[in-house]
Length: 84
Image (cartoon, rainbow, N blue to C red):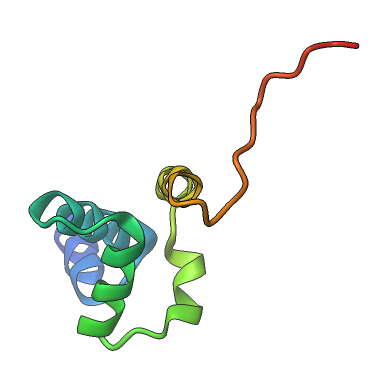
């Protein structure tokens, strides 16, 4: 019973998990990148882009960061540093 209620709530209301799953499906089923997929999803579902930041999960955020670096929207960073 509780599982059914949770499933209905997730289907009705947008949560971080559902948002991430929908974006992943959109990227896999089309030739959109993650940035374009989020914009398209927001336009189709009448969601303001400003409110999306709290729906982006950590793995999705990492994918966006890598994509932005590949497109030269962000400076490329290296995580490893040599000790001086």
